[in-house]
Image 1 (tube, one colour):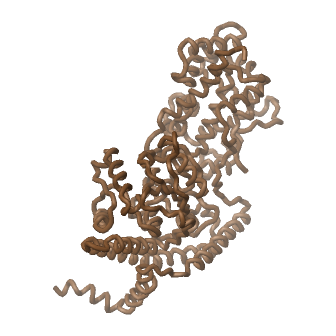
Image 2: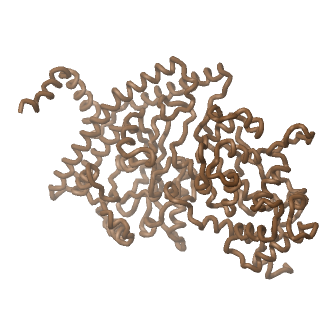
Image 3: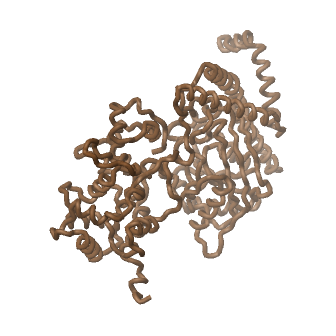
Length: 184
Length: 455
């Protein structure tokens, strides 16, 4: 994509976007390419090495959308800002995009493609198949998925809901692994 | 027929003195010295003056930006996000799992693994290593060319005046000089090359002189300031010379110092005329379009050429297409399969005086040459590296990568595994499969571990 310059001036509701996502105008300007209409092919080209590239591209597009505009793009990117340590839930401000909860939700939605709030066995198998390709047999795939579900599924409904997902990840330092830091 | 001579009469009447002065200057100072290989000498001062002017302009812009309480947009040549160098998939997943308290890398799925893939994907979208190689590199100081400026808001009157002066000098003085030299040079070269081709004896000696003259004139026409390092490693007649590719001018830069045989496709038009004239006096290898597809034919002709001691070394650019001179991309293994000595050369252009990169998706060849001729200068360094041979047990691809690493190290360029053909095509699935393979090893555990659980 390169990093040619653009400015936030051309973005409609630039200030509101800034407040919502917390991305500073200089930094988002530096992301450049004011994407008037970024299509999925453009993003896929960047992610051809990534096994779950297609899913991540899907996360940028709302259902039914064909192109991504700059505000939508920044909203997704906002999930990857490093977490602020001193934010507390006080019920007044809306939860920022880069809170631990929202990051977990983003990852959850990568698994849960039909958005029913649960990761079913089929969905887990699909993700595993994408991540492993043809390198494993069907039996190996089934056994890996089986083990994962057994460990995470606490209420025995054969699916992983968001709370179970969050519980199984409560010790993991996702702030570090799911943040992109800009150079000063 | 008086209407034919009328414009010439008018021209000489009104511009008589002007054209006289012009021709004297051009021939006296540029062409004749170039023909005989005498250096001109003012280049060092030219560059020093230009550099100090560029620093002054950037200082002016910074001052103006400070007045407005903004920061000057400076391009970061090393990227805009923090990346951990050389981190493998295995290491990243290990880090992630260890943060949750497990001590070893258990062969099982962790739901958190998806975060690693996610972050890699985002990093690639924001700032990836490959696509930024296919556009011109950005500068930290402004060099008074609008093509490399991003801070238009911070130009004050002084800078504007300086810029206009720059435009006048470049387009009014430098460009016409350069075009004249180029035209004369090509004309002389074609004529002399054909003439030399007709003389049977002392052919090699004279043809070398003619070729060198032609290239020298071309270099002068671009105000090329080339520094050659390690000349003792210059290629000899028994091998091929490989170099990184940034522009069609690369060939001229290298051939200015030593005679090579070029390889390429035969074109039509002016370029074809030049190619045909070249072949008359020196054995270059031009292939018809249909022959280019036949790799064995190409390889055979190369082998025959290299085996002949009297013929010059072949000049090859294994990347296959132009890249922007911040990195070296994958070398095609075809030229490394021949089995002869390889003489690597690294070419590094200084982008402050004029960016030599040819972005073929943006400009055609003529547009590119005009841009080159209206820049300040083309400054570059050429390093000749010691000759390399294929080692025992090394295949062509490994040899190619070794040569590529040496060139990248010498030229201060980033060594990338990616194919420069990605400019136009998509990535092959092999890279995705590699990632899948790495991850499956982590999930299933090492095969040996499964076979010997007691160890």
